[in-house]
Length: 366
Ligand SMILES: *Cc1c(COP(=O)(O)O)cnc(C)c1O
Image (cartoon, rainbow, N blue to C red; front, side):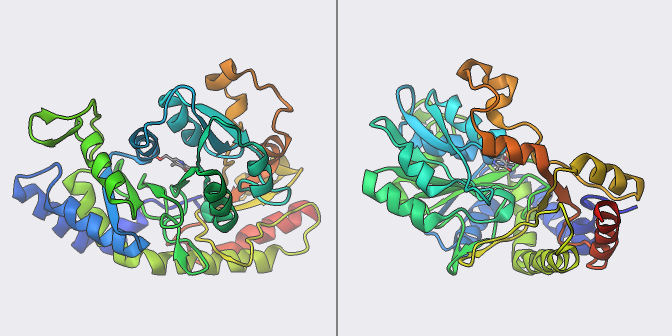
């Protein structure tokens, strides 16, 4: 049996250190917003190459609180990818702002800068690019458009911790980066957790108030805030994992390269192709095929796990029925939803698993 992702492997690798961090926090008697969170924020900011990091409850709230810190709401428009996980959209609509979906590039999965530029109106306030599957969006082009039109940019880094564009980390490329440390992400906690990275001291300051009831001084509330705090336990456990992240991402890169090598030239199968300037971290290795159902069945029969990220694009979800966007509104996102298939991938997956997966795919499609 080959699982899609082995969630127990990290604990097996780092048990003594994780247990020690756990015991340290348990014995401290201090569980929310303390030394561990402060130390993690400094370490993660250094890793991302930003001046500030603010630990938050999860990735969705990281995205939403950035928009709230920029005072976005009803009457404002935020440009989002049509091809993304629904959380990206939910963060925007939670503030009362309107989502303006933009299609991906014709051959890729991330937002198309040309189509993005064409979607800007007098109400556009921000752009929320997503580095989907760990592949950086075209941030150089997006930032150039944002500067020209005076727009804010918040990166959705949920799937791309450690990824780079021309040597600079995802999360340091826009005005802010929103990170999720959900357990399955490349840099995952052991529960829910998130953060925002930024060079903007005022934004970081506002987020510190917003995450804690709108308060910086105990029982003095300067605005109506939220409860979205990274807790001490998760921060301490993340601190154990952070020094390993680059090596784990390197392993994912080797797996991706091996998939490329073993799957090349199979008829009816399209492989992921990262642009020259991007250094992806392969959160997922996603192939495309019109014969996806057959492929999934064959893999399943061979005891190999595979998943679809994502089967229904946000605009076709019932959650967004009120937007009145019917089938055909975003054909590129819809086509991806109908053909994408994620193969086993993980920082602890043996490289030889690739050969077994590839053999099943080749036999099915040839
Ligand atoms: C996981 C994810 C989120 C949300 O993160 P949570 O921590 O689960 O709230 C947002 N955007 C994308 C692209 C994600 O993959």
